[in-house]
Amino acid sequence: MTIEPTLVNQVLEKLKKLPKVIETHLLYGPYDVYMKAEAKTTDEPEKLVINNIRNINGIRSTTTCLIAD
View (cartoon, one colour):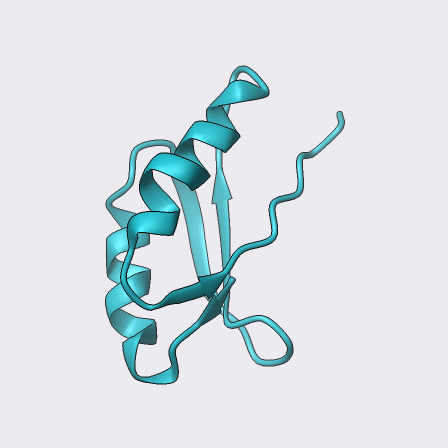
């Protein structure tokens, strides 16, 4: 994710409280935050991103990758 610079800590705290979130990490480089969540179906990540993550103030963009194994 890319985050508004002044809202990184607030975004991290909100992400940690979301259901299914396993890890959150601050990054240095082209992305600001890495988040890992668990899902049992391929629909769950889509719902998490659309219904929860994109509603958090300060998140500029997200990139979603699914683990294949």
